[in-house]
Length: 205
Image (cartoon, rainbow, N blue to C red):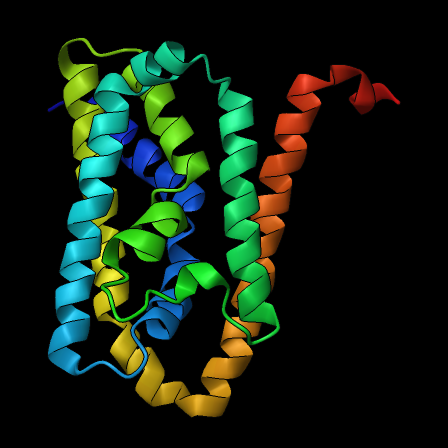
């Protein structure tokens, strides 16, 4: 691939990194896998990565058609998803996990780690927009960027054990609240941006 294509892939990965909130993934992963063995946590990390990759690739190739089929507005989709993320973030802040974090003994890989945490509304909306141009080298570059961000998310989850050992229980509680606040701010920003798209007059009010 050319340097121009490599630069495009890197730029796309950076955009997806921000939208997926990969920096806020480790505290959520640690909370969701609390009490599990090291092997089980590792298994969940790989399962989450697979679920994220499948979700984003499916959204990339057919997301636009699915939204059109059900008559769903992209901004409405983003608001709905952001509200779910906001509920999860609020649970982290008050140290009382939301119902979504309680998987009733089932694997948290798909929900909440893959959806809505990583492959959330903002990330899905981004890859759907990327998927509107699926020709030639651009399509290949976008697919490589999606694969790249899923692997980066895997690295962050696998590195969570080191973070957990370094910070200890008290440190994790502090970090969880800080990143919960950050995650809540990201969700609210997404909601506000979508509302401004619905009501552009608010921006000049």
